[in-house]
Amino acid sequence: MSVAELVTLACCDLAAITRGRSIPADAVEAHLRAGVGWVPANHALTPHGPVAEGSPFGSIGDLRLLPDASTRARVEPDREDPALELILCDIVETDGGAWPACPRTFLRAALKQLQSELGCTLLASFEHEFQLLLEEPPEMPFSVVAQRRAQPFVGKVMDALEQAGAEPERVFAEYAPHQFEIPVAAAPGLAAADRAVLLREVVRDVARRCGTRATFTPLLDPENAGNGVHIHFSLLGTDGSPALYDANRAGRLSELGARFAAGVLAHAPALCALTAPSPVSAGRLQPHHWSAGAVCVGERNREALLRIPPLVALTGDPGPQMRLEYRAADGASNPYVALAVLVHAGIAGVRGGLQEPPILDRDPSELDAGEGERYGVGALPGSLSEALDALAGDDEARAWLPRLLYDAHVAIKRSELDASARADPEELCRRYARIY
Ligand code: GLU
Ligand code: MG
Image (tube, rainbow, N blue to C red; front, side, top):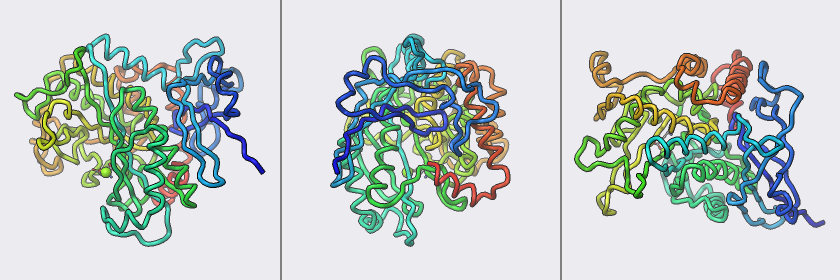
């Protein structure tokens, strides 16, 4: 029996589930102008399945998934397993007008604002961790054996990501059982978020091809390290110069960079409602999980919400290496929304002339209360519910979000919290491992 060549027109929804509709490969050209049908209520689906209670979308309305041909990505067939081919889409009204809750459109607008207000473009890279769901006992963290044990998955996934244009840079076994990390090359803002969506789907698909399952759940085991999605970003000035870099300042972070960072820190609790938005996400963001233990900026510090990664003298010019790493994102976040709100927070920091944050040189949990205050170090929200309250109470952050997107997001998240209320932490982690 032959197998149809299909291309999926896809989008990533507010619960970070990639959904879409597939068409025959030879019909792609014919769909580039008008895409395929889509339904507003699809953006009110909780990751548990049902439509969220209290969502702004009902049974009425129609939209289009409008493909962006530049995102077309293909992973070749593997024996009898057909090719995986995706084109990422904007969600638009049936007349082509912007739909306010489209995450891709939201990011595009934020990047435009970055350009018009600060004269900067953004390069970003989403650094993903994930775990394979395997019964066997794990090998040692970071070991060659752990990596070899997971063959041929590891080799196949790197090949597939390369084919898909995701530019994988490395792969290694991480700290938690059967955990891996795959950093990819930086790309301009929108393409970086596209790449994040693609990476998640390619990893999941290759794991499936290998007869196993990969999960990007923020936390698989409440007692162990979680799966982060660290967002690395840098800003380029109009002449292409690294706008976050200044050789003569603390942390070599430019004044613009420090104020941008101040905006991210100032809005951190609200940001978590969008970047770490599952009921298990806060469990990952605990001190000493090497995720993000406190709201602060630190140089080479894996407990800081914002980390300045090392500028490696071995490779020459430090300027182009300069970037900030936002560590409180995870696989339950929509990459477009997460990056967009980071950009908005940064712009707000610069616009408001926020005080430059001190660069913390030690583990934030070692500070006493007085030092904590002096260094401006705060705690991250202890739960999704706290994060949603922080967002609700942060008028400035709420104003960045189109009303429809905010209402749909909150409805989904509140429904998830309701559905999770009676589950113990282990059961909740198991549930989210099945979702992500
Ligand atoms: N697994 C850690 C997290 O949840 C990150 C470890 C690291 O790559 O520094 O964010
Ligand atoms: Mg890691």
